[in-house]
Length: 104
Image 1 (tube, rainbow, N blue to C red):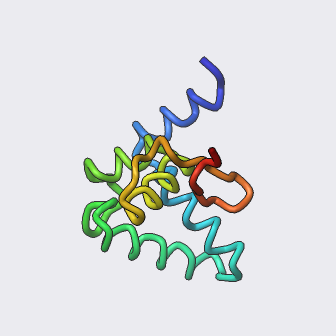
Image 2: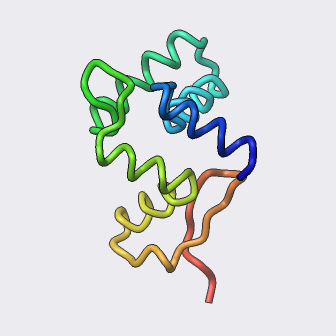
């Protein structure tokens, strides 16, 4: 097991900030928000979507599932749901954080 994996497990057991929250905060900061505003918007958005339990940083069952999917899985799931197609028909672009249909 790598150090990075051990650190992630330690953070999860100590009640650290979930990875999905950290990722959304960093995305909002890259778009120009300051740290405080990015944290508030990220948590509010994740509470509304049912990823975090109300008033805490604790993940719901949906939140745990979305976190396990990772960025690529979430992007593919979003696009597959939107287009009503099978997720296996999509490919993920790390550069754009988007999923697109595979070329035949």
